[in-house]
Structure formats: C-alpha cells, structure tokens
Length: 186
Ligand SMILES: [Mg+2]
Image 1 (tube, rainbow, N blue to C red):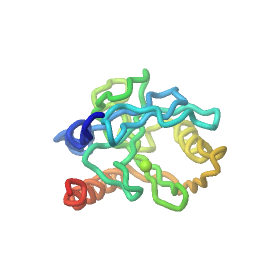
Image 2 (cartoon, rainbow, N blue to C red):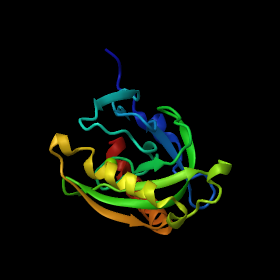
Image 3 (tube, rainbow, N blue to C red):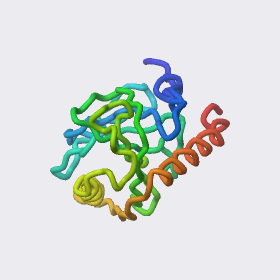
Image 4 (cartoon, rainbow, N blue to C red):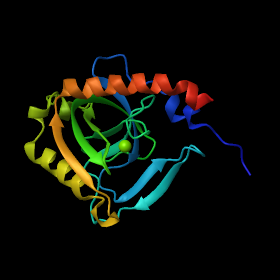
C-alpha cells in the first residue's frame, strides 16, 4: 500500500511556458513511432501503459502534454512535437508552437498543439504551419482521424489552425488550469 503521490508535484510542477514567446514545455508520454499508448498515471505519477492501439498505427511525432494546462476534455492540453529522432516517455521538450489541430473525440473538443524542438537547427526554419511539409499535416490528420476507429470511438477532425491560434489555446488552457486549482487541491 502506498500513499497517493500527487502528480501535480511531479510533471505538473513544471511551468507551461519557457519564458520565450510561443515556446512551451511539453512532457513526452509516447515517443514517435510507437503504437503503445503510454500516459502519466494520475495516481502514481509513473508512466503507465494505457493500451496498445487497436489500430495498426504509430504516433507521427513525440506526443504528450503541456504541464499546468487544462483542456476541455479535463486533461492537460495535448501536444505533438515533430522530431528527427524519438525521445522517451517523461522527456521534457522545449517546443515552439507552429499550429493547432482541432478535433472532437466522442463529441468533446480535444485539440492537439503542433510544435517543433525550439533549439533544433533542423527545425529552425519552421515557425508556422505553411513551413511544415504539407504531407506531414495530412499524416497527422489521418492518424488522429483513424487511430481510435477499431475502438468504436468517433473522431471528428475540425482542421488545422495557425501558430497564433495554437498559442491562444495554450493561454486559455493555462487559465482553465489556474481556475481549477481550488478543485484539484481540494
Ligand atoms: Mg486530450
């Protein structure tokens, strides 16, 4: 029997921003290329294997969340980071927001911030959606549109929006998180 270890004190104690405009902290849960869906367990604070995706599909980038945010699905705001080499679960990436992919998961807004590693010279020229290879955007859209199909979950893709709209969503999710703190800490 172990005491509940509040994950707020772990991953969620990291600030959402880095001090640089439009650059956020992303905690990776699922490395690029993996089909296993890992996520931070809210009870133990450990990285937990939630499930092996039912669909034969792999994450198109490192995938995780921005700490100290709360999205409309009651989880931290999700983020996908383009990487040349997968990192690992629990890795912190300083990511520049280049866009946002909006979708609904079973009718609930479930947005994905798209970012690139801020200090990676291979991504230095990518600051907005138009600078991302168009095919990568199609891959991401197709991945999210289909990855839960065999689970019987309905995903409604709503399309891509700009880096400014991505940053606005980050700010709104930080505000939502701050507004919820009374509830979280009881
Ligand atoms: Mg989510």
